Amino acid sequence: MYTASGYYGQEASSGSSSLRGSMHAQRRPSNRDEFDGPSQLLDRPTGEEGYEPQEEDLPQLPTHLHSHEQDEILTRVNDRLSQCAFDFVARYQFPIPVEPDKRPVRVPGDREWSEWVYLLKRLATKRRIPARVLYNSQIKQFITVLENSLEMRHAAKHTSRPQKDDRNILQLISSGLQVAKIIKDAPAMKYLDMLYVNTESLIQSRKLPVPSA
Image (cartoon, rainbow, N blue to C red; front, side, top):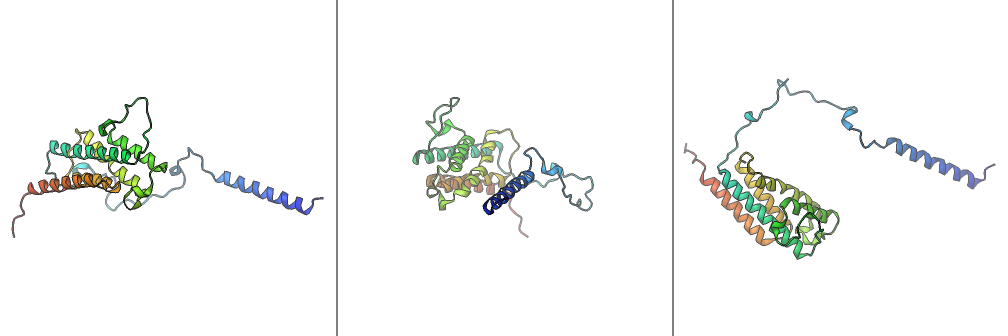
């Protein structure tokens, strides 16, 4: 015969076990692809059966800068961002992990921009960067701003890629400017803002004048 305490104790244990079993049963296997299960397909756009857009069908966006000019602009942004990161890490004495296959950091160029981004992202996710050192304490936006600047580094490094249109070049400069802003680097902001203005002015100077009506 169960006592009151024994009965309720057994009931609680049984319920807890049942709950754990239910949670375990609902847990999705790590290797399961959710797209293999029930899913929905949208109706194809009208008149597009079997059609796939081709690159040559896209409208040509304005491109007024020569390849070597684009390379020079993006390299300048890349170098200035590396300087930004170097100064930021040095100013607040953030640690740089020692890696046996890499030389110690003595100048900004000892790390590529992608490596600086990785370091800053790790410092942020490990909560080593206090919100107060960022513009408007935007610690949550910090990683997004850094990731947006990564395309600029790839564009600067892989110069054999097709030319970028004018808007893309200006966008890449702007993404670098946002990095300088969020880490509150006034000299870098002025440098990149001037680069943006000069690049935009160069683009405008090469556009054909619009004929008057």
